[in-house]
Length: 300
Image (cartoon, rainbow, N blue to C red):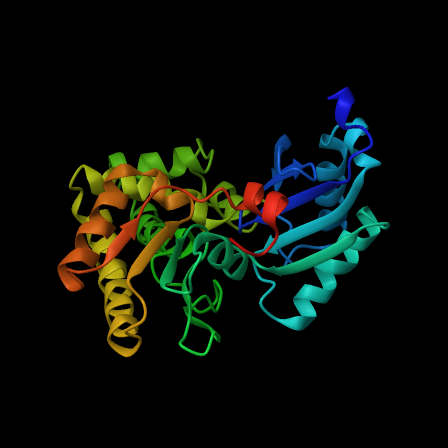
């Protein structure tokens, strides 16, 4: 580490709907540090965003801080100019002497995932979307409008649907292994209406937290969870098929997002896409977005 103290460093920041991953690389492309923090999506309050950026800053070793000259950031929700400007202001305040660049997490991941513009990026995490470059190198999206619309196959939408079902059962005093697992994940033990309502309406709770529970039960053939996942997947696969039908230069799908950590889910999505588009190439290995942004910027 002492031999790199005078080197200029670059931070790569990959911030999704729940978590931020970041890496620091030197001018030779060697990764010197990696860290994790909370998401810095633009829908958070000013105080929370300030805390999150400060957390990132404090986690980076002091021996590297003074040499940082560039920050390349892909942040969930920064697909619009007002949101980009808002997060860029926090980025500039945290790293005031740096060249700070920012785009959406989907665009950043798409750019570092494909050397040629021949692929579709399928994100299934807190949110979800399909993104790709058309024949004219224009960035295109399917979905990704946000949680209020109901992103297909997103952790938020999957969690929202199971929460709605569990609450109906709760009001009828009906309990089973699924309702108990959902309440346990929400850290609710007394199961009083006031306690349930307090958790649901707290700033720290997101329905996406329940998605892993749904995937676990779906993988065990629990009918309600299985139906939620397969109904969502059917819509997503149709969107993938329609993109390939309209854009014959595309031949690959790259998976990205936290839901793919579940092997059953990953295999199910891959199998479903292959049935719809038999000739497709599917890349399931996770892309090191933060590391690539630190080493190469917004290119592959």
